[in-house]
Amino acid sequence: MELKKNVEAALNRQITHELEAWHVYLSISAYFETQSLLGMAKWMRKQADEEMKHAMKIFGYINERGGAVRLEALPAPPSSFSSPLSAFEAALAHEQKNTENIEKLADLAEAEGDKATVSFLKWFIDEQVEEEDSARRNVDLAKMCEGSKAALMQLDYMMGKRESSD
Ligand code: FEO
Image 1 (tube, rainbow, N blue to C red):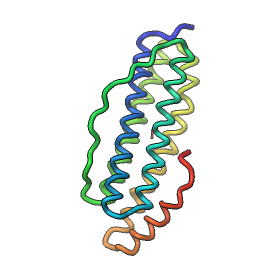
Image 2 (image 1 turned 90 degrees about the vertical axis):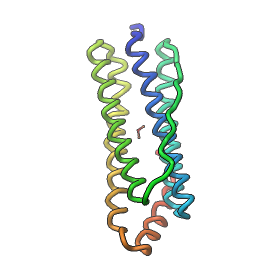
Image 3 (image 1 turned 30 degrees about the vertical axis):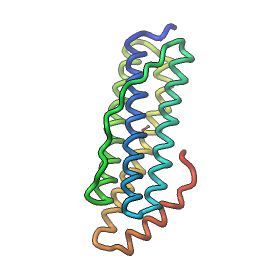
Image 4 (image 1 turned 60 degrees about the horizontal axis):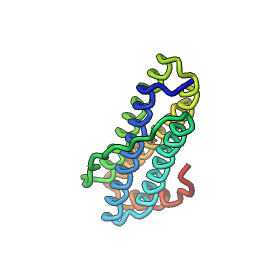
């Protein structure tokens, strides 16, 4: 089944959303660097790497279906945050928005009878559960650290232990 133009356009839009997430997380990582929270900076860099992989997964899929990848301009990400907690809240809000975007895309594929795209997107739907969970956990942990620099340093150390970007 040929990739319909509207599904192709929506997949391309989702590449943009994933690259926006990449951009936002890089910006949050840069903010943590300015605060000397290097463990959190590392964690966010890995999260950014993950978003790039998501974008490239869709990039590959569009090509595999004989469609055309069209990259779009990215908006400037937020670059300053009032606290580590607000940076983690921004990341969570971004993940929640991305879940909505993916679900809308899956609804469109379903409505167009594009079973291959529905199947392809299942991985992303499952991934969003994990992504929202870790983003929410970061917010919870940052809330626990409020008012305690020692706790914040401990969290920073713990986040610096993240090994992979999967
Ligand atoms: Fe690729 Fe965090 O959504």
